[in-house]
Image (cartoon, rainbow, N blue to C red):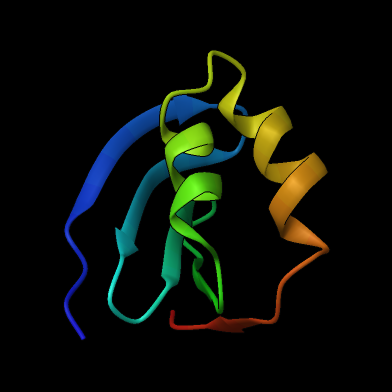
Length: 72
């Protein structure tokens, strides 16, 4: 599954991407880790991608709430 990534610079976040069909959020961190979060709804993606405090929004609403797996 190739997810198109959008470069960001917010806290530890360096890029984010979303696959609406699979409901998978992909996040690249400043240490090079690439993580996928399962069952993330489109509304959460919309809020994350448009947030002025993306890193905080991610930490507060996604990081501990969804099943994740490391891709790299």
